[in-house]
Structure formats: structure tokens, C-alpha cells
View 1 (cartoon, one colour):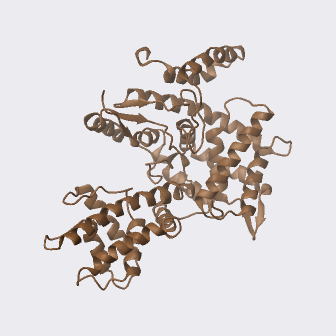
View 2: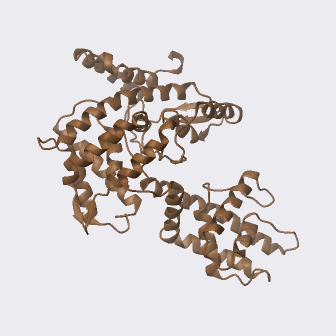
Length: 449
């Protein structure tokens, strides 16, 4: 039996094909104008990782600093570095680290790992306010395990142990700082805020996609081609819909302007500031676009959908750690956020937003189905082992972690027949055939495709 490796990059790679890269500047201007944020994503990611090092992973940073201090004290050329200076330098380097981790071992340092360390040390040095910047040269030598062979065995062992420990901490800081903080603060196009992805990279060129497939065929022919996993921030079909916004940036801008005007009275004033913030409002509109029901739902269905959106918005606000957090909840802000989400989804005569949004979301959803179908076909025909995450045999519009639905492929197939009949009776089969074809592709056996 062949060994199958998991290749997380495929989800971001294939999703990027449906992002119109030519709209990057327009989408950036729209986001900054609406949300009132001018911070670059790289700076935001750095700030978020510094926050995690200060609050969530402070003890891990202290352990690293103490290990490094013992190494410094063992050499007369470095013994003057204080614990605080070492800790500060480490924080800057970790917050500036460009990847999750390196794989440095004694005597084995790849060119890529060396480049990542050099880049992080250089960036950390530039951001540092330290009076003596030579501490960064010392940290660099230790991270690269640069020993001349004259040091005692205990010294070489301590340096190697530190480098191993450092790699574990950078991975945790990246996960908590980038994925679980920065991704919930930067909302230019949330379909790009995915595990292993870079929101500042706007779209994937066709040439890049083909080159990556060729490399996968040569190097990892049995890697899993996954577009949704247990760790996904949004299911693939949600991302496919949100990608559509890059094809209609002008209309998106006009709709945002209208929706902000229609919903301005639904916000609450807290400490002289309207809540929720415009940034959270921007996330909410994208989230609704990505999850809007395909068909009309009854009162119970609308209530369930509203609760889903409220729960997600609450989670996103707490993960962002700006106005509330899991550790220090701000009940006033959270209540304002939940009330706003509920108010804009209420079906009342006064709520002009709902009908206007529903019409827009329906058109986006139709185009999104074509994106979902195309994405599925690419996954099935690209090099690697195509993976259909459980619950995604049908269209799945889940948030944060895709729901592991208790339904088998047979269950899905059994649901298709009455679905055909229902659609045919309404004479709307021609307008929703991509959804049916998508389901058929996802549930058919390989030999029948």
C-alpha cells in the first residue's frame, strides 16, 4: 500500500485560481475605505504574534530566554548579554519569522532554513530598539548551530537543544498569532484567510498552478489533494462564493455603501464608538455572501441560520482579541455585535437590507456553484490523491471547522433523486444544474467519472 502524504497547499492553490488578481488594488481600496484600516497585513501579523508571545505563550518565551542565557554565560564573549536583552531579541525574531518552523539539526541546515533564519534575524534587528544589536548576531549563530568544534560537549548539546526548542515555539506562535488572531483582524477577502495561506497573496496564476502540479507529480505523487479539512476556516464552497466578489468589485463597493447606510441605525454606541466596528461589519457581509441558503427557508430555518451567523461572529470577534476575547470578554460589545447580526437578518417591513442583500447573494451563489464545480473537477484531475472531506459530498457552507456530517456517500446519492424531482416540479432545474452535477461528481465512483 502506498504511503499517502497530506499536502495542505493544494486548497490555497486551487482556490486562488478563482480570485481575480487584477482586482487586488480595487478590493484593497474598498476594504480600507469601508473598514477604516490602513495597516499592511505583514505588520498586522507581526503585531498579532507579539501579542501571543506577551499573553498566550509568554512562558514558552521565558523558557527559551533562560536556555539561551545559560548558553551565553558559558562563553566569555557573550556572557554580558542580559536575560531581558535575550528575551527581547527572541521575541522580535519569532514575531518576524516568515514560516511556521525550520527543521535544523546538528550539522544539517538546508539552504531554505538558513534563509528563513537570516531573514527573521534581519527583520527583528530592524524592528528592535535595543542599544546593543550584537545580541542578534549571537542568536543567529545559535539558531544556525554555528560551533567551531572547540567548544565542550555540553555547550554543543545546549546549542542544539535550544535550536530544537526554538523551532517548536515558532510553529505555535505562527498558529496562534497568524491563523487564530491576524486572520480574524484582516478581512480584505476572507476566502484567502486559510490555514497555510497568505491573505496578502491575491490569486493564483495559471502558470503557477501548472508548475505546482508538475512539482507535485514529480516529488509527491501520492500527496492528498484536499480542498477542505478538519482545520479549514471555511469550507471550500464558502470560499468559492466569496471569490466571486473579486469579479464584481464595482458592484460590491456600491452594495457595501448602501448596506452601511441602511444598517447604520442598528448599531449601538459604546464609549462614544459605534459597535460593532466597520471591520466586523465588513466580515459579516462577506460571511453572509458565503453562507446564504440556496433556497428559501421557513421561520425555523431562518432562526437557525441567524444563530449560526451570530455564533460565528462572536467567535471571530473573540479570536481577533481587539474588542473582546476568550480570556477577557466584553459583554457590551458582544451584545451589540449579536444584536446587529440579528437585526439585519430580521424579516420585517422596515428592514430594507434583507431583500436587497438576498437578491445580490442569490446571483453570487449561482456563480459560486460554477466555481465549486470547477474546483472539484480540478481536484479530481490534478496530480495527487483527491480527498473529499466527509460532509462535502454535497454543497457544504460551513464556517470555522467543516461539520463532519453523519451521512455517507450512499445517503447523499439517495437524496439526489427526490432533489431532481423537486427541482423539476418547480421548473428551475436549468438554473441549478451545476449544483446537481457537482454533487454527482463528488459522489460518483472514480471509474464512472
